[in-house]
Length: 381
Length: 92
Ligand code: SF4
Image (cartoon, rainbow over all chains, first blue to last red):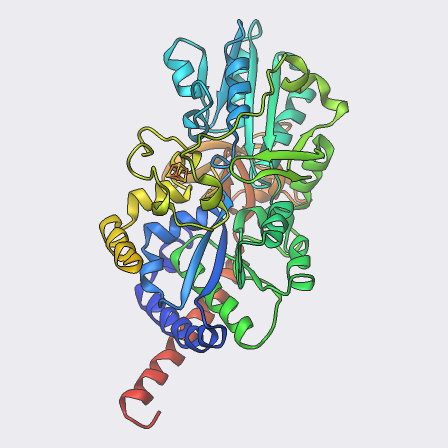
């Protein structure tokens, strides 16, 4: 496949690690602590664990796993609303596979399906629209979620539904936007971040300009990165180079996919269909201003929020859950009290255990758990 | 859902809905190409390498940029080898 193997070359990885190590030593020494670099995107978290990248890096670099997995930040109340829609007679509820397993306060969509509710997994929102075309007597609802990466696909599907005057299709919109979230993290007092790996596929849509404030106002470097191991290492090296030179710039390591100005057609579809919500509730992070989008009035007839009476309750996360601290990078996944015991990928308590892009599931699947626990025990002693 | 997968456009299947067949490692699938047309005639998109997310081609893979990045990484690797050699010879 195009440019997949080329970006996994172990020799190049080894030289990047050597270059990173050479820069990290003096930078950490001058701070008297390891460097904290946050990878915002869950896709990066997945690559980091799958290829054991943390283990290649010197101890002077700590990767902080950010909140960029849309499945993982979905609050229980939203899942409950979605279950309520699914259980409405006549409805076919459709969504991506990962979203089906996120726990609600009573059940997940997968559990609702097991009880006989018509919930179907689709690969694309276009598949949901096709279901609506084929089942005119049923109401087909697509549970749409994701950052700017998937927002255009939902917007274009809705515009297609309008063009074909399909009346039995609607969207339960849970799309979120990354920039206000990064700002909330930068304003959070418990975190000291030295730089960011920027989300590659969000940036392919929005371009690099929206991150400007991170360099200008917060003086932190951000490097938009691809998803292969060499991409991550290369981007880390670029972040460290900026730190060593005392610069804070927005750079793009992923030029083969990310155009500097983003994708005009995708942005146009987004702005036609969606507008910012005053605030959106995130699992573990609470309410963040302007961090979600909703359907504009002009497309109200495709809006499941207006078509259905939703309970819309705010449901607190379970007490034992420490997803919020993990999402903000304050604790590591394996430091959560229920990690691997009452919270596992098979029976997730928190959403970070659901998707393979969630930090807890990634640790669980690829992490050297015994090693981490012993290290922790030694560190605590 | 957020990672995407590269594929190559092999045929236009629906002009009005902007659908095309892509070949993803030998598997054929219909995707929407509205986001990568970029003012071109639809037929000119055939042959493009694109990154596909949830049934939509979202970006054209820029070969020149990919080669440039790989070139930088190769040069960086050569520089590292030289540094290592200098250290090993005790004159670094
Ligand atoms: S282990 Fe489970 S409950 Fe704890 S932070 Fe991870 S997902 Fe949340």
